[in-house]
Image (cartoon, rainbow over all chains, first blue to last red; front, side):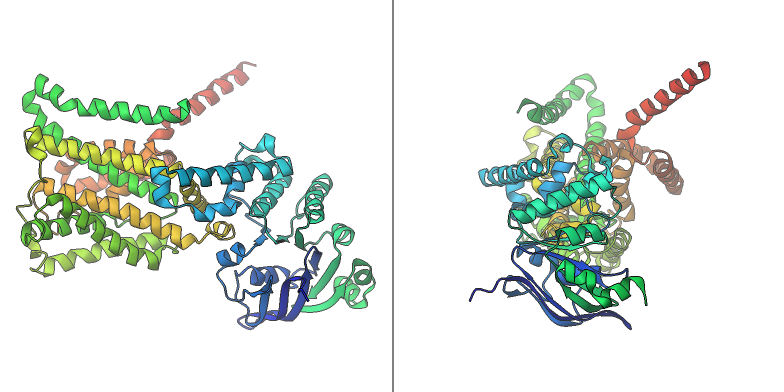
Amino acid sequence: MADQSILRVENVSKHFGGLVALSGVGFHIEKGDFFGLIGPNGAGKSVMVNVVSGLYRPSQGRVEFDGRQITGLRPDRIIREGLSRTFQHSTLFFDLSVRENIMMGVRTMASVGLAEAILGTSSAREKDQAIEERAQEVIDLLGLEQQAGELAANLPYGLQKVVAIGMAIAPKPKLLILDEPLTGLVAAEVDQVMGHIASLNRQGMTIFIIEHNMRAVMNFCSRIVVLSFGNKIAEGAPGEIQRDREVIKSYLGE
Amino acid sequence: MNSKMAPYLKALAVMVALALLPPLVKFIAPDKWELTAHICIKILLNVGFGLCLWMMLQAGELSLGQGGFITIGGYTTGILVAKYNLISVVWLGYLAGALAAAAIALLLGYLIVHLKRIFFLLVTWSFAEMLHPVVTSFEHPFGGSMGIINIPPPEGLTIFGETWTGYYYLALVYGFAVLWIVWRIAGSKVGLITKSIGQNDTLVTFCGLYVRKYKVMIFVLGCFITGIGGGIMTSYLTAISPETFTFFTSLDIIMFNLIGGMGTITGPIVGAVILSGLNEYLFAAGYWRMVVYGLIIIFFITLLPGGMISLPAVLRKRFARKTKKQEVGLG
């Protein structure tokens, strides 16, 4: 009886003072899923991602990742468990090159030490090489070779989003959380970014996406959860969600 | 490989040239050597202090308390080797001073490294100011307002003849050793992490890295090295009192980075050379010194935020724009 859930969110609530951002929300994400979390503005989607990734501590409830309780762990610990996320805004180190940004994501970065860096020991050189090789793999995978030496700040917006994804997949995460990766992109860029995400999913990476672009969500997601004012109002396959009366009501009003 | 080695070789060449300075000056103008050595020793130690802060600034640690860590290094050395003779080897006194500075940096750093720049600045500044009444008030072990005197030079320093020649070489080794360490770190993956922390620490956290660990590490290392310099400076002066290293010491170290520029590792070196030299003359200006400081700060922050090292690029740009305008005018 192997448990296929990579992420289990159980009865999570988050209050900010008197404001209830999430109230008793629960869902599971299975390994290999392309999971979508949608809802109108202010529904609590980003709060949910922040709770899962450890930026916020939930007021109530628990989060389990790959069979391990992660509620209340430090965010960097949660990330090292094999979960990666991107951000809506300020997604990159803008004064670093694309290559350096992606290197920052590589897991080996966490093991470099100060003394070996100063002395340039063979262990430091091995780690450097591992980091650079992994970064090159990601650059090749996303087709960023031409921009690899450029400052992230100088890239067009769409490519910045691709670099952010590159940084997030560099550690080979078990679960990739994308917080509105398509916002602000033009149609061609949307296709480019979604193409990369879909291809990662085909290669077996579990995807958890928050997005407002309904066409993309409905086309790509295998399962969707809908939030409205901090409550889960629907869950199911894209077809079911599109027909759901509650969902239509929350998006269009009565 | 070659291009990687080139800057190191350049630094080595400068170091060798500086090593040949004493015999040269003594040959040309022997009566000028003591004063020259005095200025050079201060510059070289200040280069070390400036570089330490530069490394910390990369991680967003704007410390206005480096004078405090120099004080800790200096007093520890003085107390152990001169006042109580607990350590007979001065070199070990330097090490003890560095360890004391590092230990206090560890405690303080653990508490404050997560603070935003301005709060970090306020805490480090007030920490350094706290030391002043403490060392003034206690005859034991700090020697009260008189401080500690008769601090000897380290063993073997006199092989170069006069003590100031020995100290010149010691300061030279110190300055370039600090340069080497800071340079190595800046070029390493730890340096990449440090730089990233200075830009966006939340994002570093979500790269799976524990930001606090790296910030404390850099802070402790910076203060350790600064503590050694404090010991060397103190034994060079042969005495330390509550007035030896003050708020201005801390301010100067920030100014090295402001005047030289923080963009590259050359910045604090250029800044330390300029301001240490200038300080020798500003000393005579008494409290007018503060007016000069104010003007310097305003000038660099408003007109040349990239410091002296950005001057060539700024001038080139300005010049290019002027010629362009003229072309448009002619067209």
